[in-house]
Amino acid sequence: MKKIFIIIVLLVSYLLLGFSVKAEQINSFDSQIYINQDGTIDVRETIVYDFGDLQKHGIYRFIPTIKINQDKKTFKLDFSNFIVTRNGGNAEPYKITQTENQIELKIGIKEIFVTGINTYTISYKVAGALTYFSDHDELYWNVTGNEWTVPISISTSEVIFEFPGKIQKEDIKTTCYTGISSSNASNCSHFADDQLTANIKSNLTLLAGEGLTFAVSFPKNIVAVLEPEEFVSFWDSFIGKLVSLLLGILALIWYVGLPFYIVYRWIRYGRDPKGTVGITTAWFDPPKTQDGKRFLTPGEVGTLGDETVDMKDISATIVDLARRGYLIIDEKKKGDFYLIKKKDVDDGLLTYEKTILTKFFDGEKEIRIKDQELSSEVAEVKNEMYEQVVTDKLFDKNPQTTQTGYYMVAGIALFTGNFFLAIVAFLFGRVMPRKTVFGVEAKNVAFSLKNFLSSQKRQLEFQADKQMMFERLLPFAVAFGVEKIWAKRFESLNITQPSWYHSYSGTNFSTYLLVNSLNSSFRSVATAATPTRSSSGFSSGMGGGGFSGGGGGGGGGGSW
Image (cartoon, rainbow, N blue to C red):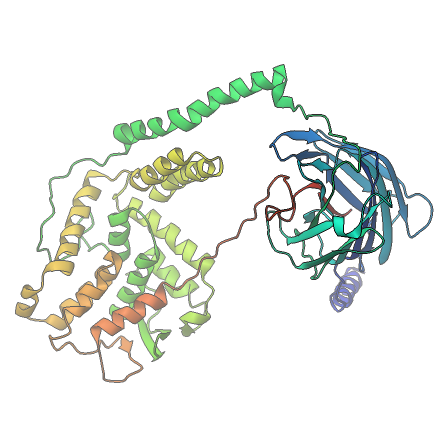
């Protein structure tokens, strides 16, 4: 019986996966707005909503109830007379919720499911939507809202003047905007016809988060002046002012006290101790471990130098593994690198080196670097490198753990606009990891080696085995970021192509080109950024100062 059940589940899953699910969208969003002589407007929204293959209960629609006039004062609009129907029939059940600054209509009931194409009509009256300027009156209205979770294929609006004889077609001026909030794009058409109707239409599909906004102006003294009441928010009340005081105290601590506390912690706990070994200008070897049994690896030295594991350290480790006979770096075409595993892992490798040889290759003997998605593997290698420098007693604590805490503070500070704290937390976070006395001395030895790699030119000519020196110290030059300088100095010293590197150009070997190509290839593990969107308040829509998302109306919605 259990096997039969599993077979049935698998069969159903297969059948379900074989059918594509049609996505939700709004086929059309049509708005009719009547401007009345008493200064109110009547709005009728017809939304043709396609639920696709999904079963939902209905839609929700939320509309802001405040606007900001040309004097930057906030006013509250008065919404009333809501009527909702579906598919041209009787009134559709809905629940209305009103907060301090918006109205939300939740249309439908949870006991009934709807699917496919359904037409919803939402009607309501608004007082205070018009704006009165010195030379004209204006309706600046966000038709659709910019916060719908689905695209809108077609969006139109008709603004109808309910007082023929008092206004002419030529008196009506129109403009429109499309896109995300604050966008000045005008992918829309607009005109006034002989029936005293302003016609606005979006010329493109509005994606989720995009909307249609228009401004229609007309002469003064035609409609009644119906300025809405000024909006008094919670923060202007007594309790709001008390909360503001408490938040102000917390802000003082956040913006002023915490940055100075971070500086204090660095002075008291974060500064490195002093060592007995200084920095010189002619040091030919990397530092050794505290027990003197081995040299520190290029990855460890790079981490010790800047207290951060980055792609330079991983690139240096890959070159070092190749130099030690574990890998072959094969450049089949210019800039197109393959890694060939030559030896399996053994006890002579550190944990993060073993991870590179196992997780990067994932059972393969040869990989093309450009084809690899190694985000998780790189993260694992970085964690193990941090653990290694603690194991080697170079740091008191994991530098990453220490830095992450300060970087989180910096991120929160940046989000809250506390740029001073963000800068302090970021800068001191980089130097806060505390080295041991041995770590300080090892760093000084490492920097002595860096000085040699980047500044000692004449002494190279007197080295007995220039080939060995070049290959042995190349990974450390990569870790320090001076690999190009190091390679350039060997250009005239008759260095042959290393056995662990196969060049696409055959025997034509250039140390500089080798390092330059490796550098660009190994550091190509990509990172991505996420764009952000902005929003804005309401203002006048005429005269070039308008934008999508401005004016009254707006909001958005979705299905539930």
